[in-house]
Length: 481
Image 1: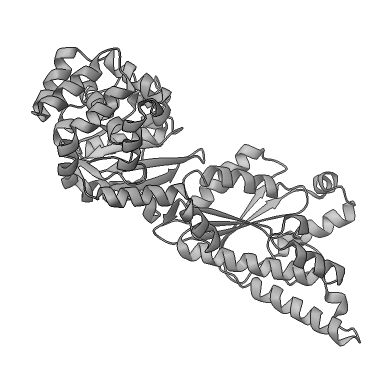
Image 2: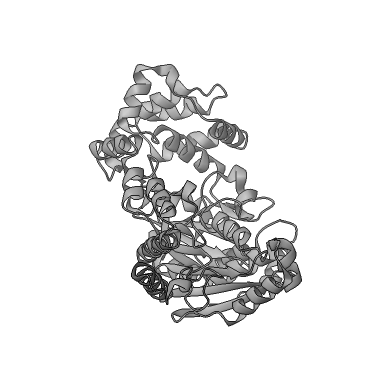
C-alpha cells in the first residue's frame, strides 16, 4: 500500500471537515494529472467528503488503467456488485480509514444513467462535462459546472423509470411526483445558474426543438412533474441512440423485481444481495468469555460492513428453538433429551452456510465458534459424559457429537479476534462465580484452531465500544487483497 501523508493532507483541509483519506486520494489524482470530478448531487458534497454517503467520481475512459492502479495503490479494495446491480463502466471501491469507518467510491468511466439497478443510457457528453469542471467552495473539490450538473439532473429524472412505468404515468398523470430530495436539488442548482448560460449548454448538445424547449421550460421556477414526463417523450429518439439495453429487458427486470423473485431466490439458495470481494470471501471469528462484548462487537461490525458488502452473521452459541426455522424438529430433539445433538446439527448447518458465503466472496462473522478441546464449556461438546456409557445409543451419540465438533473446528478461518476481559469484570457482567470466570478466561488464552491465518487480542476492559470496533474493523480490512 502506498504511504499517504495524512497529517499533511489534514492540515491542507483543516477548514473543511473532509476525511483525510478522501482528500489524500483526490490529491493523488491531481498529482497524476487525472481529470476527474464528483459528478452529481453536489448540494450534499459536504456529506460525501465526510464519508457519510457514497462518492461518485467521473473519469475519462482513456484514464481507466491509471485510475484503477491508483485506487489499488492507496489501499482501496475492488468489490463486485451482484449481476442485477452491476454496471459495465462503474467500479465499486471500498476503503476503511484510520478511524475504522468504511468509505465507498463509485468510479465512473462515462456518464451512465437510467433505471435503478440498470443504468442503460450512456450519454455522449463525458468529455464536455469534465472540461466544464470547477473547484467547489469551501470543499475545494472538482465538480462539474452547475449548468452541466443541472442538465444531467433533468435527464436523470426523466429517464429513471422503466417504459412500463412511464406508460402508467402518462395514463395517470397525478401518479408521478418528483421526490423532495430532487426538488431541493433542482432549486439549489437553478439558483446557481444563469438562464443564458444554461441555454448555451443545452444548445451545444441538442438541436431537437422539442428537447431544447422542454429543458428550457424545466429551468423555470414552476417545475412540475408533467414537464418531466414531457421531456421523457421528447427524448424518445435520443433514448434509442443512447440505450445499451432494450425496453423489453428493462421491463422484465422491473417486473421480476416487483414480484421479489430475486429476493426469494437469494434466500432459498443462499445467494448474496450486495457486493462481493473480487479476492474472495473472509471468515472472522469473535471469541471471548462472558461479558467481553462479543455480541456488541458483532452487531457493530455488521452495521458497518453490511451497509456496502454482503455480510453473513452466524451465531455459534447454543441455538434457541424459538428462533429456529425448524421449530418442530427442534422441539422433538428437546423432548427426546437429545438437544445437544440438535446443537451440533445447527452448528454444522451454520458452518456449511459460512463456507458457502465465503466461497461466493462475502464476509462471514461468527459470534463464538465450536471447539472440541474443552467439554461442556465455551461452545464445546455437551455429551462427553456419555462417552463411556453402557447404553450404546448414548455412547454413539457422544461419539457422533465429538466427531461433528472436531470437523467443524477445521473450518478455514481468516481472523480470530479474542476479546480479553479480566475475571472480575467477566464474573460481574456474566453473573457467575469468580472461579468460573477464571476458568473461562484461562481457556480463551489457550484456545486455538488448526486453520487460522491471523489472531488478534483486544482488552475490552481497557477499551470502550467504539475503540474495539475501530481496531477490529481495521484488522478485518487488512485481510482483503
